[in-house]
Image 1 (spheres, rainbow, N blue to C red):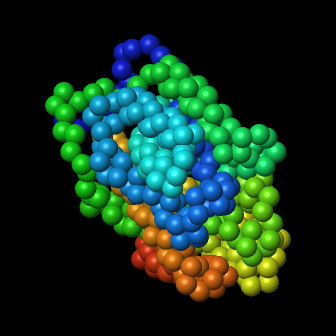
Image 2: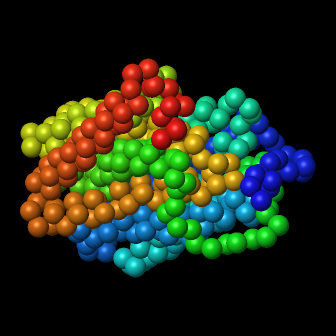
Amino acid sequence: MGNQHLHMRSERGVVGWPGVALIGAAFAITMLGTTLPTPLYPLYAKAFGFGELVTTVIFAAYAVGVTAALLLFGRWSDQLGRRPMLQAGLALSGLSAIVFLLAGSLGWLFVGRVLSGLSAGIFTGTATATIVDLAPDGGKARASLIAGAVNMGGLGTGPLLAGILSQYAPLPLTLCFVVDLVLVVVAVLGVQTVTDPVRPAGTLRLRPQKIAVPIEMRGVFTRAVIAGFAGFAVMGLFTAVSPAFLGTVLHDTNRALTGAVVISVFLASTIGQSLSSAIGEQRALMVGCAGLIAGMILVGSSLVVRSLAVLIVGAVIAGLGQGMSFRAGLGAVTGASPPDKRGEITSSYFVMLYIGIAIPVIGEGAAASAFGLIAAGVVFAALVAILAAVALLLLVRSGQDRGPGDESAAGFSAG
């Protein structure tokens, strides 16, 4: 029992930082595939005849797939091994690309998005745990940073790739998915060469997991989730409705620009994650929440004054805040998790974050249909800023409870 099955197998394969690099590349490729449709939604809307609310529901179908995979399969990699689950995630990613290639009606988009969500749900928790497992001793914190960075980097690269190809290359609704399929094949080969860090358990208990966290780490888990929820709501906003914001409010329909705006958020998030490791988890969560508040104020203002520049500045500041809070929260959660439950607890963390993507974005789509895009966007930005402010107040209170001089990651991770 315990940690007995959680160590490197005797099989030959890539380990250490080269293994981290290969799993990280596969992680980025999988996440890239999940955001490819972002700049294409206006084309699909025109082809299949749907509006902004349906766009957000299509986007949320992805979050449903992610959450289902995390709940159904979140603990499986702890028992079956990491590699089988990673390969299953890549297979679903490739299948999603094929569905989009064949899409001839609205229903195909929902199927493709659910499959994409399932692939991301399997990969997010499993790849994060694998990267931490493969890292050499003393490199776990760096590995956690790498996992978060490739996650966000892949998510941001998808819209830029699809935007450029659909705007300037032939076959605007298909070429990016062909490229994605090629990348998935490369990722499959890469994952196959890496040593699986987990030996399958002797007795398998492949049950759906509960959102259960050991009592000794519930404090750190709760604080990380509140900040992460707000941050992922921001990411959902930009990946679901940025084409509508640019086209309807700012009157610019260039799909490459849409991709550039989206990737600016995710690149800022990656930079924020790097900065967070330099200032400590507790402080990074607090600064990240402040960044989310400031960024959302600017994003809401940009819709009122119809300014692309203000929108981009707000996106970058919000992205920096999201990255800092996400990285700090993920590092705290993985660091406090028992090794034999790391995959399960990491998956639970991401379940809560992906709820933050789905529900607020659907609400924004419904409000946009009822009251208009500008009013809905302003209200959405205000609500996210308020949520980040609540998270910030809770973090300040938790810091006061611990007292001065207890700002270390260890103190934070102790909950």
